[in-house]
Length: 274
Ligand SMILES: CC(C)(COP(=O)(O)OP(=O)(O)OC[C@H]1O[C@@H](n2cnc3c(N)ncnc32)[C@H](O)[C@@H]1OP(=O)(O)O)[C@@H](O)C(=O)NCCC(=O)NCCS
Image (cartoon, rainbow, N blue to C red; front, side, top):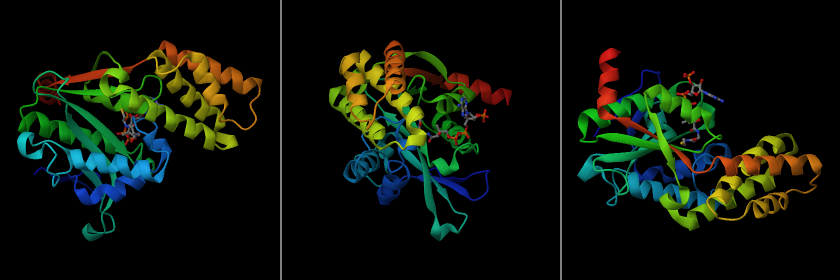
C-alpha cells in the first residue's frame, strides 16, 4: 500500500496502523492548539485516547473496520525518521473519510500535524502526495474538506494552494449531530478555563467565536454562550465581557463549516500545467 519518503529529508508517509493510537493521543489530541480546529472533545486523558482510538479504528490499515480493502483509502501517518527508521516518531496524520452523505465516489479528508512541525511546508507536501495517490490510484471523483470559518486560516491556505474551491457551508449539526456539538462546546469551555493570563485574550476570542457558531446552530442561545464562557473566567471584567460578547456575535454571524471541493479533473489539469 502507498508509502513514500518525503522530499523534505527525514520524513516518511506510511499507512496509519493500530499501534499509532498512543502517539495520536499525545501528539494530536494532547495539544489543545492542534485539537482546537478539529471537532472533538480533547479535554481529558480519557477523551483524547478515545478520539485517537476511533480514528485508528476507522482509518488504520490493520483495522477490520477501515476502508483500505474496499476503497484503498484510509489515513496515513507522517513520521519523523531523523533518528533512524527504527526510532520513527509520528508527527502528523492525513486521512480520507468515506462518507455516505457525499456524492458517489467522493470522499472527505482531514489533517493534523504536531505544532512543532507547522509552517515548514509539510502539510502541503503530504497533501500533494496523497491527492496524487487518490486521483491516480483510486476511483475518487472529488475530495471535500471542511474548515471552521474565521478560526483556521492556515488550513484554508493549504487547501486553496491545492486548488480546492469553496462550494458552500455545511452545518455541524447535520454532519455530526447534537452530541458532537456538545463535545465541541465542552472542549472550548475547558480551554477557556485553563488559559493563562498571557493567552487569555486570543483563547477567549477563539472560544467565543466557536460558541457563537454553535449558538447559530441552536446548541444554546447567544446569551447562554456568553454566560457559559464568562463562568470559566476567575475574574471577569468589562474588557473580557466585551471581547466575549463581540466574538460570540461574530461567530453567530459566520456559522457552519466552510465546505471546499477539489475535483479529479481540476487536479489532473493543474498537474499538466506544473
Ligand atoms: C492546518 C495544518 C495541517 C497546516 O500545517 P503546516 O505544515 O503548517 O502547513 P504548510 O506549512 O504546508 O502551509 C501553511 C500555509 O499557511 C499559511 N499561513 C500560516 N498562517 C497563516 C495565517 N494566519 N493566515 C493565512 N495563511 C497562513 C502559510 O504561509 C503557508 O502557506 P504558504 O506555503 O503558501 O506560505 C496545521 O496547522 C495543523 O495541523 N493544524 C491543526 C489541525 C487542523 O486545523 N487541521 C485542519 C482542520 S480543517
